[in-house]
Image (tube, rainbow, N blue to C red; front, side, top):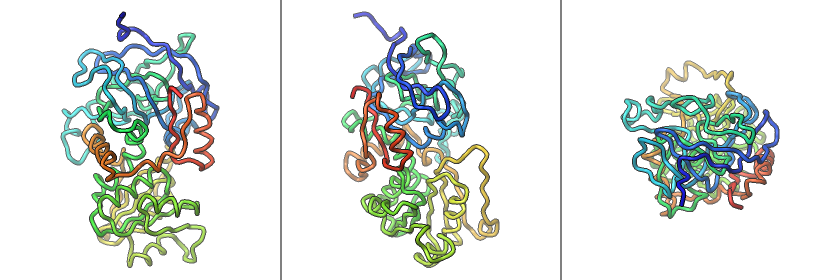
Amino acid sequence: MEDQSSKPIRCKAAVCRAAGEPLAIEEIVVDPPRAYEIRIKIVCTTLCHTDITFWQAKVAPAFPRILGHEAYGVVESVGEHVEGFAAGDAVVPTLLGQCDHCPSCASEHNNLCSSVPITLAPGMRRDGTTRFRDAQGNPLHNLLAVSSFSEYTVVDVTQVVKVDPAIPPKIACLLGCGAGTGVGAAWRLAKVEPGSSVAIFGLGSVGLAVAQGAKMCGASKIIGVDLNPEKEKVGEAFGVTDFVNPTQIDKSSVSEVISEMTGGGVDYSFECVGLPSVMTDAFRSTRTGNGKTIILGLGNQTDLLCVPALELLFGKCLIGSALGGIKPKTDIPILAEKCMSRELELDGLVTHEVGLREINTAFDLLLQGKSLRCIIWMDK
């Protein structure tokens, strides 16, 4: 058989031609992987709120573009200097890289690789070019150097995680961003302690994954905060013990309600919405002296955050987070094992499944608040 690994591949992809417009299924060309790159055959992918943010051009606008960054696939071919990967390996691409050689990767407290750093701008991270072209030969931008809304994609070796092929593809898919971020924020970043109290602002996929992570760590009180009353029942299935709907409270603020519920505020607060006002509420809901607030929501590029300076002086802290603080190559395989042993139960995050040609249905469901994660299968 003729070796296709050094040749371009023609395949289908969902292409975003302009901000906010429905995606179009087009035939595209995916170039072979260059040095330190891996070409992946995508098995399934999902739609994340981060994709929506880029689709709406709120951050780093660039069109035409292939979106998607949460996926599972198998290695199709590898470029020069790629070690530890071979065709057929089960993998999860991630928006963050991990080279394991730079000072950041060597640090226990940093998950932002400085050797091949993350950028929101389009292009492969080593040379800024694209591996995608449309049928007319025109370049197509990628997203977060992943672009999983395509049957094939090319990703830097630092952004590819090998996983146990026994894990269900749709569960592995979730670990690449949303679920990995939520569980990781509680487990790796906040290091939630047994018997502690937690507040989660926004019970979407990331917030519910935080609840699972907090439950896994032994938190005794997990308060979910959401405007949607239906999220109370949904949250219970993921470990949420108490629920607050900001539209149905007698107090003047959510932070007052949470302070009253916990005798002074929670030990850990997680903001999973991406609104500065909610970030402030999350911060003010934590306990004086040692309260930690973890910011997970992606806001707009021009958003500014305002918190009371005196509360910082009295021991509260505010922590930013990328991918929940996890190191992808180190931690995603661990999370995959926890899923297979049922220590983590993330199946409930998958509420819908469609084929690539129905990808706009996934957008509609998420925008209407009718889905958590919609799995998009390439071969359905």
